[in-house]
Image (cartoon, rainbow over all chains, first blue to last red; front, side, top):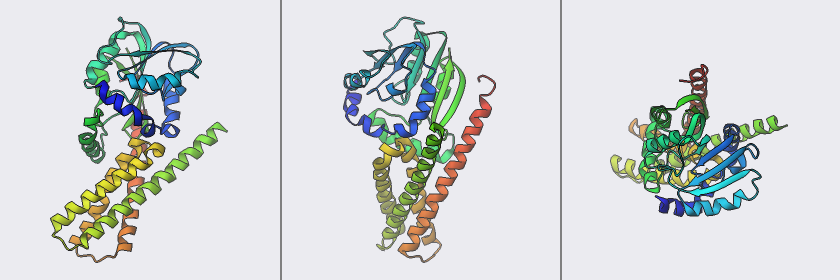
Length: 195
Length: 138
């Protein structure tokens, strides 16, 4: 899995560089990041600019060493506390109930077993802690849903599934979904959940 | 000022999305029109036209993805890239004689219609989500 993401790190910024479009929604979502925060699958650090610089001690985690190497450059101008850890989202190297917030950005499309990753998040999040997710999911609109199923046939090899029901998985993992906002149709969602 | 800037950005993306979908639809209908002109059997024409159209729309979506967003461009582009060429095939089945120029115009109209449908669906999604999560959780 890490090999795929090491290879994708080279072009990751090009195809995820639509910050002009998604940036305001990410900034609004990640404004709620506070105290001890785990940013899951931080990638090349594109979202660091949306994280609050004060009041949070952030641990950025990614499975790919190449992603983290690129992320280090984006960490430098960040004035808050931000440490990077290389680890698998499905097996988090942290004790139970240690984080106040967990944030994800297009992560649940990329982990092989999203439910396992969500259960790990549940484990490391303290009771009452917040889960903030910027994720893309399968549309409920039939034609859009079929288009996403077809796209998954091509993107799966590269480690991305376009048609997951992340909102249902969040609930199955035990979280209470507090608020969901549409970023793009019912495909890209800003999800607020609590343990 | 910040609010006005955000408002302008929304309009810029709205125009860019509309122009992109109209362009994809025009290009893919033109391809299908060209395929019909080759004089092959209908299934072969359909297969060839759809394959080239899907390849082209993928390339076009990849080209604009850094600006318009990967999912925001690829998903609508795929829908338009599938439906617009089928419009040409439908006209062919119905025996409607149309030139290349008319095909491109048909494509652009279909692209615009798809854009407005997605805008409408987006509005429904936002309304539904607001309605579902006003009571503090589900």
